[in-house]
Amino acid sequence: MKVVAVASAKGGVGKTATAVNLACLAAESGRSTLLWDLDPQGAATHCYPSKPKVSGSPNRLLAGKRDLRSQVRQINEHLDLLPADPSFRIAESLLAGRRSPQKAIRRLLKPFVDSYDIAILDCAPGLGIVTESILAASDLVISPVIPAPLSIRSLDQLDRFMTDKQPGLPLLAFLSMLDERKVLHRQIIEQVRGDERFVSVAVPVSSSVERMGMEQRPAVEASPRNLAAQAYRRLWAEVETRLGLD
Ligand SMILES: Nc1ncnc2c1ncn2[C@@H]1O[C@H](COP(=O)(O)OP(=O)(O)OP(=O)(O)O)[C@@H](O)[C@H]1O
Ligand SMILES: [Mg+2]
Image (cartoon, rainbow, N blue to C red):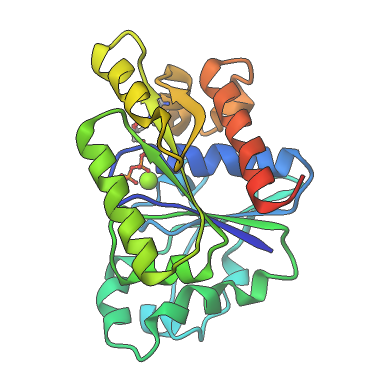
């Protein structure tokens, strides 16, 4: 099973939109896919109808004593969702007190490795112990970057964090919520052109992505011909190549 984390130091950059759409495309390509909502806010979980029940002690969960397989919900033939768990609100402090916090996420994923081809992890923003543990379990990190100078700085922070905690782990960045009518956005396109962390795909700002929470369907499924959907498709093709899946 390949593990792809969608992560950023910054909030509101399009991580959830990316994770949900890429998971949909992975499943569409016939790969058995697990979308894991690791953000206790549950935005990815909310992109699908009906609220699943999640219960149990956070301590037991993070100690690897709860089998998460019972929480999994089938979305379609090839896609399963592991919904947000409120326990993760205190994961940071719980993991801080453990001996090998880096191993926590890998341990939680263990029961799934033989059942799925790919797991896509929608991460909460930030660079703490939970993110460190996610990196230790991942084969690739995807980071959406909104076209603003501060966002590039937060990509640099993630990059340094990865080099420090998980040297060699590949990072794939792309411009998210791009509006080419804006001068600043066009300047940022130029700025990142020579930056090898960035793929040439940029996801444009699009109401079809905005509507996802309301319609509870990924944009690539609800509006497949939309420009943002097409960009996610190119991004998925790039991810397949990077993971050696094509
Ligand atoms: N391409 C897009 N076009 C228009 N709106 C978008 C696009 N991508 C994301 N959004 C909107 O921007 C907001 C933030 O997106 P999203 O929730 O995916 O970001 P996030 O990085 O997961 O945020 P958080 O850090 O809070 O988890 C949401 O309201 C979402 O609908
Ligand atoms: Mg999110």
